Image (cartoon, rainbow, N blue to C red; front, side, top):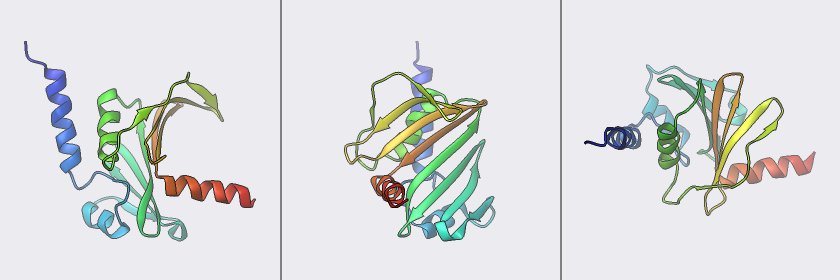
Length: 155
């Protein structure tokens, strides 16, 4: 019997990693615009914060830039991301490092349920949450996390 689920996952992984439309940590703003082309739905959201938003199939993707490099990517989907979609998105943003699931039970905060978190050895993080039937996977670099901490401490 063929392993069709495994084959489908590998095909999806190969397509995502080779597709220029996939958002990746570290991409420059210019590279993101080049990959999505003029025909894609893309808008500048709060230009001062260097944010681009576009649709990638049924997923809305928001990329946040610091010093012209993607430092946070948010993937939003109505319904739930399945395990293979999550694996593909994490692999596309691994930058040669492994994602390690954090232990602990899911928790609820501010009207959403955080169902899973992952960390890389360089302290980049990924967080999957669900709220009102919408799934959100946020992948953040260490640079983004440090910027948020500094902003919070300054307040």
